[in-house]
Image 1 (cartoon, rainbow, N blue to C red):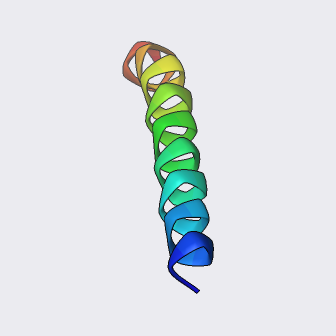
Image 2: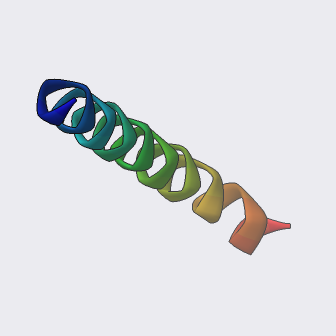
Image 3: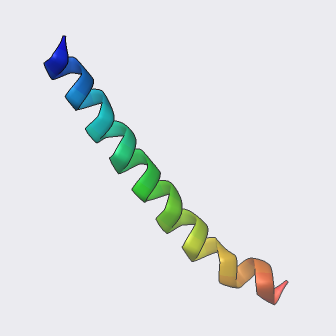
Length: 33
């Protein structure tokens, strides 16, 4: 159960990092528009 919680936290952290990268990549185009 604790192991599953750790895996969940790690996967969520990776997902959030990917989301931030996508937002950062899209921001310049949004500003240009």
